[in-house]
Amino acid sequence: MSTCEQQTACDREAALRDLPPSAKLVAKVLEYDGSHTQRQLAEATLLPTRTVRYAIGRLEEADVVEARVSFTDARKRVYSLTDQSPTVE
Image 1: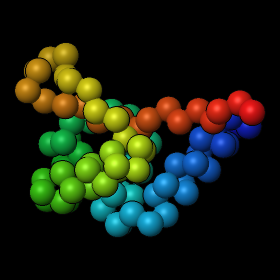
Image 2: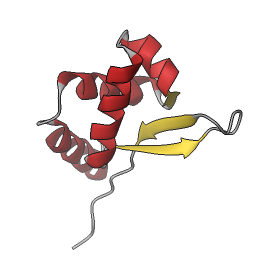
Image 3: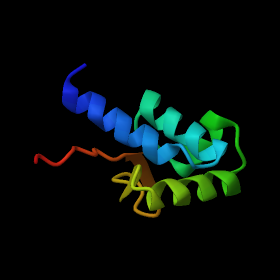
């Protein structure tokens, strides 16, 4: 793993440290499986949709997750982990 990838993982881990377990679980699913809709996250984590919504909100506040509009259905949003590349000093 390159230094940049290690730094991104460390930054993400630090951001997740104070978040609730549901947010950590959602982040792990996105890390392992890639982008998901809210419904797909609820199915993959076995969490209620309301809990998934809350977790996504907390992850967005921490800049760990980003959302984009689904190409197949504009009413849905697709969530994925952000690419937190460190700034060069």
